[in-house]
Length: 202
Image (cartoon, rainbow, N blue to C red):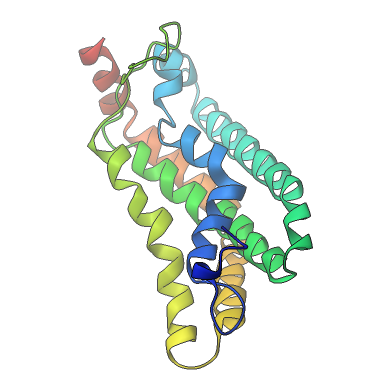
């Protein structure tokens, strides 16, 4: 895709490359976080024994997502051989994934989560999947372009748009302790309804 002339522009790379950078650096996080709580549906009550248990669950998963995203970023560094701009594209994707996409997907996944039996086979297994999983493409595919396109449309250029996406992602990373705490408090406040939704479906 990076070498396809159909995706090239006057500045050397196409607008679609931003989505590619987000997907390449955050594919694991995007797949896993769609079922943020469903993975732990059978043992969710254990985390409710203490308020710190919910916060530990959130922090643990956020650290896992961030670590795997950084690892994916490092694995995609050889793409820079084709174009040095790819480094900025992937850096923007990495920062945006950790700072914005990760807490946003976790929040969306906590809305009426469904239980999932992880002991069942994966083939045609749609346990834990609801309408929200299909709506998650909106923050992944639309939100970064809401930041990126104004810079392109008003003449600042694609590189300026990528730096803006990177800056928003870095701001989200700096605010991650606050968003983690706020999300943990949200889960604790709604602990009974979330736990009840797991029991009703099982």
